[in-house]
Image 1 (cartoon, rainbow, N blue to C red):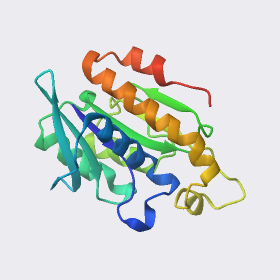
Image 2: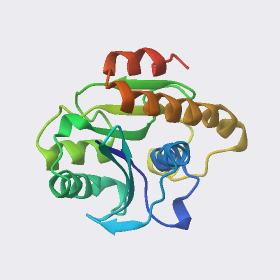
Image 3: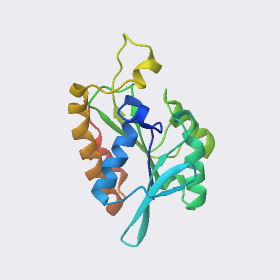
Image 4: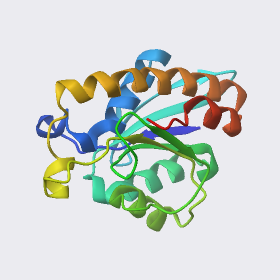
Length: 187
């Protein structure tokens, strides 16, 4: 299984809206005691073993719009079925504080997810979307690349913990319906 958190590499983007996927994968890494100590496939990654199965956690080091290049390389290198990959990313289309799990589907308005579908060649990739809402007073690109406010982070942080715990359980039971029930929220 490969779990990928999407974001943009570099200190400049660390606490921005577009890096909610990196924040989530960092929290999952804490939960599973995984270090991102490997580089390859245009990503930083680390792995652990659960019940004899290798679990890879990865952060693509391409910029968001080219995330598919890294995900495709990871899938190829680890010889994994795209259905056994989970992508975690920010989503402005759902309200701040909401989480949505989908088994498959389009990339919606998210260019990183659209690129993954294009590169991997299938929409059948499970994903977890972290709701960030949108500040309609700002240009969309400026908003997703702007830092998350302290007030908004107080709403997002508990969701990152919730995602980490749910992923830990999902790794053990592989029940996507249960993952959806535990994470899908209205916000």
